[in-house]
Length: 614
Figure 1 (cartoon, rainbow, N blue to C red):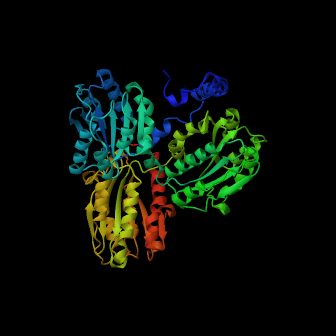
Figure 2 (spheres, helix red, strand yellow):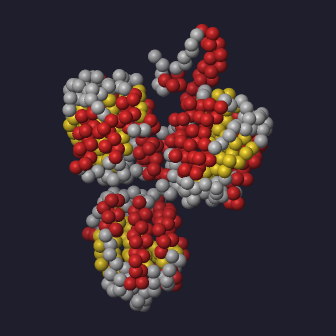
Figure 3 (tube, helix red, strand yellow):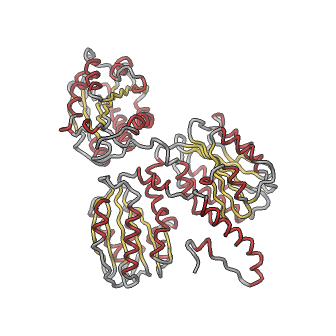
């Protein structure tokens, strides 16, 4: 009878005497639903949409129950769910591939690895047939298929939708599928068995149960988040401090659950010295710093430190805590004020002191405040602290915030930031393969692979080519040779340097022809064209460096100069057309491996707002 999700709308008591104290809880639940239903956009699906827009490689296979447990209307709802689910991705990408397997007595592919644009038509031909619920046999079918058919490494997803209890064993084949690197989601409808669902997925966070097929739409974003989140969270460093209430008004069990919530957010984030840094401060009447932003840089250390937190007891002086936490975002305390800085306030009760001024001061510093309130917290106070409804959540009990972990981790990445990936460009690497590089060429390859990973790659998005030069230049692959990240990365790995001299000038002249249309260039469509020169030494014959690099610019090709160790900085500047912002230099080869973050950001910025004729 209750509306979905039932954990928000079902209340159970042992006897009628318990109804009276339940009144306040139900009142808060109703008020929370009204407030959040109208103004709170914390769970706004725009974050997911933006994240999935950055996902450019994935094989997604739906394994759907077609047994006697369902009818034609259920199948119709399933097809609507699949259509809406896939609608979150870019439909012009070559390497988002979709498959669908229907099963009952046995399993069979209805279609496999087709493009997003072809799915809608293919779904029209699928009809309900009925039969038994042999989910185990279907999983075995999939496990054997994954072994023999090449899918995207690290980006293959199986979404199982079933309406009944399996009549055969599922644990073994499900484990074998996951062991192949496939991320499995289990969605149960109607009479499905929750324990079996978890055996299929292997993770409660990827296990879902809804009452009817109509409600599949309510879990769409929960499935999309782990698929798309990593695509937008790579190279999105930020500072996060949890400010958690630790007063005497919190039960020991709720305090434990709050720690589990923090741990879950950390687990679902990309943590590290150059990624997301985490700090924790407790507050009651006083504050206590558990650890600073520069104290721990590994998940294991952070999770252990959170486990070791002890409840302080005392009052609820939220304003004082907001004042004292401000200093811990400074550089001296491990903060990075030039990056996104986030404060997550978790409170169970109303503030007993003045909090508006301290909250305003934090926001003026550029700190984004997410306010999470449970039990006896006050929505209006939380809103005044965060000053934005999309950063506020207010729940009846602490159990209900557990589902927010992935949403919060995604918000830390700022999925709406202006420049996330190189979206559309023609990029050719012009790579020095001279003898001075010796056995350090791998660092150059890591750099190139990282630039590729920071781009959206397809025939209609970013294209890559590579030229290796020493005594003479040689094209290794053109802009129209490969259209997937995997193929490009493999081609880069296969590069072998000739290890002779450094004829850079001649290589610049040679490279111009490979930006033409017959070589895959899209100059006529006004797609930005970039030559990325990577070298570790002075040119053997520097006489024509200026002339040949000017010829590239005359054809609207931007030249980026990347120098390592003994590279000649004057020559780097000449090749870049005396544009210092297009010159990059590192002292050692291993530093080249992380330089891609800086360069990709610059390239992204110059290509982001260009209008294309394509």
